[in-house]
Length: 472
Image (cartoon, rainbow, N blue to C red):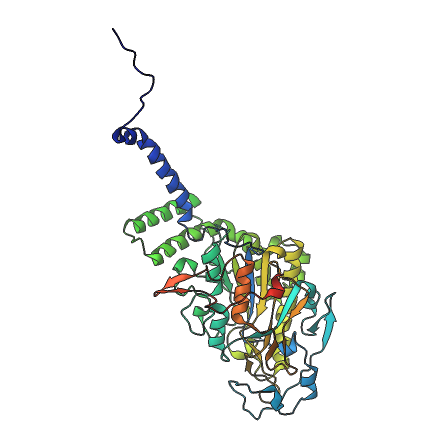
């Protein structure tokens, strides 16, 4: 008598299960590898941990220290006390150059109220005044250092010594870049030269080298060698780079971040040869746009060109851009030791129109909502005179401003005392600027950390706070 076999087996042993499932496990692993291949690129765009209002940052660095009393913080009493010694009730201040016998110096600038907000702006910045309802002026900024290099390090890295990552490096470490064919972090230096703090000012510090900035060159060719040789095709260049990559990876250690960054730079350079030339070519911009930025005018051509390029880079997904105003020796920066009038009239004439054009251009293109624009220097200037017409460095109270990126514009935050000596109302440390910037990008200042020498380091150290009036 025959017995029919059952249609299914009720049990299977472990060996049979693993044998049948082997291909399935292999496909799961392969799918995971495919998903990880893009994630292995540290610059791949990441989702922020908090709700984000901004996707990118343009930091307008006014190198040398613009005077708050000549720009955004009118002080009638200072003019009344011109030529007199500072009254004792305002307290003491330490300067780098001027002595305790220095006399107060009034300003020759005039201020008017602009926009629906009625914010007072000096006659140095008539173009920016037209945009003031989009701007939040922070009159109560302060820092810890009164010398350029240390104050510049603090402004960019949160520390007063070199070796720490800049805010641009922290941002792309936390968010990556939305562009796969352009750098995530770009610095546009002033053509007159570097700052006192030098290259470490902008660097990745102890973060992996992949987060270092790309330094553009001044002039019409920010990046050299973008054009392929006439005898080389794109396919040939791609094969060459792939061979170099395979040879390097064959002997590459897993923790070799320097070589990984070099390989990524090769790959990015190849991609830039296809897209960057179009970004740098302003011939497609309308004459009206070029005129708005001041391109072609002697005073504004350079900075206008760079800010127009910054807008084009933002459109392509670049995450952090720093166009620098001021470089080289002191008077070529906002460093008005000898003559505050001559220096600030010249520096403002180079930057005011391009900055206003940038804000207007971003706004009309719908980009201002997602682009945080920050303006400021490493400190302000002293209420006392240096010599008879200049002002010394001053870190106890100065002005910065923010616009776009979810910032509530058309308001003034904080105040200095009646002569501009000290931040007295709602003081905002440089770290608070950093924290607010990270907050708008959806980055938690506590979570954005990197283990270095046994310590979780952060941009804001342990002191930063979000400035509540700015974010709502």
